[in-house]
Image 1: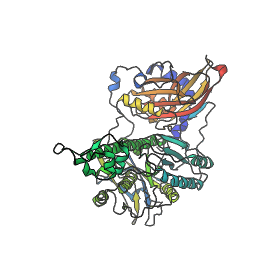
Image 2: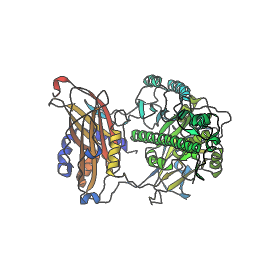
Image 3: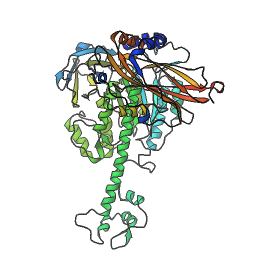
Image 4: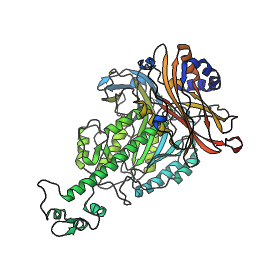
Length: 618
């Protein structure tokens, strides 16, 4: 990572010459599919993204990645009073995996940047990039205002606290703001000024979540008889010999009346039990959907922040969701379902992007609430105590603490000073130490590997991620990668920086035609092979009109088969590509994307374009 900025500077300098020269030099080694004609306003289905190609012998070559697998662990050290500790060195730390000491490959301390200067990228006319503008040695901070998992009455107070917080930010500090409801939306980007961030925060409005209980102010909780009665027709089904309808029976809170009439089959559940089970299943489906949407939002943010160096602090303002991400617990109570598999799918993205979660419970101080503090979360005592409560409040708080621990963040609970919690989150994640090691256990068996970090200084608390899943570098089937690419090409989705791009977009002399030249930062690609390096890329451009309808698109697949000399030039200059897109007169948001099939990495960029009438095709 430390070599990334100078490499990028050389890439930026060589960009223009690369487009003109490198494309000629590697013409014989690149096989391009002709772009599809633009047609209709609908986004093409996955099977239309490209014609199926027969696998060549070269595609079966085992993958080779430069460098060995590294596990990166960001460590925050604090004293007994919670003050951050700086000045520690490499020899002060010992890191263990599953109890076995691991040799450190690299060590790097980080302290807050005193000045918020960012490198000048020297972009020319009509040139754009998704290269992050980040102050040297600074952490990236994101506030996620969670509407999806939070009732409106708690959103109102949290919003005011969030606005008060951004008003106190120093002018040099950059914080991005996102909201999550049906989808993840960026309210203010990473380069937004403090004044613009305040204005954007004021525009965030509380809203109802369709996946919470529909009644305003209702919370996720086991449904009682009155809840069931409200969902039943007032007359149509009778219960027992009394002739009462189900609605009346439930309102009398006498479910036993359902069994007082005609005899039922022995051992068969009563109507009340069946309805209760039906509504419980419906509730759990909503929880499943919220869990998936929340984790996917974390994944989108991880992709968006992947290009930023160092630690990323994600401040999650939420009431959370009743689930669990417990790799060491065999079973959980129904109200705290275990979403370990869901978390596993996105944990790799969070780890690779060095994202640490700081959940902030927006419910504030709750008297008589079940305590989640005390013993370390990983201990049997703490987990057993939390399960014994069997309460929704305790379960959701447990999840927030688990996610914080699994990603190396900090959890804030039972506080009405949400503004202070947000400030503490940024301070906590600003001074840290990055440790990296190559695991002695090289077997990728999907197991959970426990990480333990020790420090020589006494009375020191360390916050870091407690482990990782040993998953192989497998991006999955190509159709899965294409679906992910389609999702990343939607308008308004945060730009992905997993692949860094620089593009030039200019209208051509032909009426209505846009000329698009790409340069892709090659060291981030997963080349395979030894003497000849192989990679397969997908280049996609989509123009969205002002109603967010696809007005035109083009997609091309590029197969790279590079000899050593050409490979070295590509590493220094980037991978060039060219596309052309026909559009009618009007204003568009042009979404550009590149995907590496070998690693599943995606880089995207969104920019405004205008096709004037005098140059547009009829």
